[in-house]
Image (tube, rainbow, N blue to C red; front, side, top):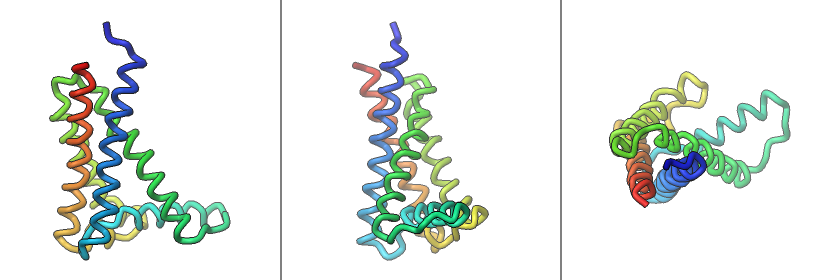
Length: 151
């Protein structure tokens, strides 16, 4: 029998792992690769934009960076957890679709949202890494989800 609470935790746990993989890759690469995507900068800009609209006091850059990473982890965990809506039989396909959609969105949406384009599409390599790394997060989610559903 399928336990809905267990299924929810499996999806969230899988999503958290995928989000963590994505964040670790982003954070490691930004120190090593000049053209690396900067999801952290997009997150910081988004937070600053909201805080400007509410006239809230702006935090220092280190605090803002920590908030951005935390926000990325939470948002990407919830997003990747959508894999739980699919049958485990289609987890790889679902994880691939989620990853590609997130990567395409991370390249295409920041400009229209007023966050700038350089962090995710400064060069062709930057855009390709952006899509690839979100795909990696989706695949990691699919792998863990498949394992958890077999247990």
